[in-house]
Length: 255
Image (cartoon, rainbow, N blue to C red; front, side):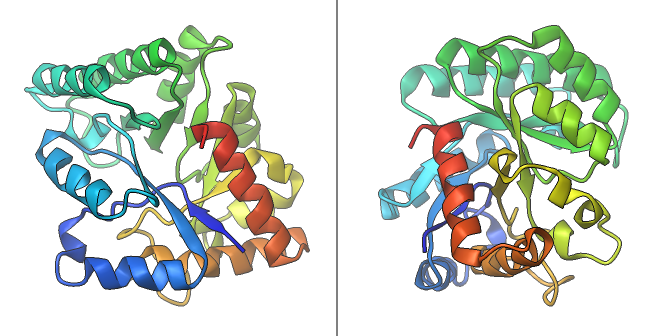
């Protein structure tokens, strides 16, 4: 069984004391592929070091996270553009809209999101979308940018059934992680109505640890807990879900 964690921040400071052990624990459980989203330029060196340590297992994205869109966002976007021109990546992201913490930079978030979508289309990369309290704003931009070249993942999907169908209509897979195991997560009530071909698995570690680790540091090894929940939701064997969702990740990332 090969599992793919399509979204994990393994370069995070949360793993500074035991990063190699965290990766080894995950690999021992069958998590062999780790897709690494960017946040901003301050993490670029750590991401490149991580890739150097695990070249067969670590696959990098580049992008500007919406919560890091501030006064200097144009400088940060210039860094993303430079990175895209300098080497291969596997996606642009994570990008999107986040209005949960602060609405001050909504306009700038919208500009940054649209620009990153356009770069993803230019380089034929998937776009990995972060959405928190911003579905309407994100869908408006996706509607403006929709084309055959637009595809990717709606990371950490937490919307309604109707929003799931709308995301899928824009050639997006749904990134499903620990929230599916929460009693108040809600997505478990309709996920079975979504064809598994539209789903990929993720942890978003070190955030959003699944039950029974909720509230603690998340790590890629806990993807097996998400897998167990998905097996219950879909009434399917875990090996089959692992195979389908990893195949879906290969379709998105091209590897």
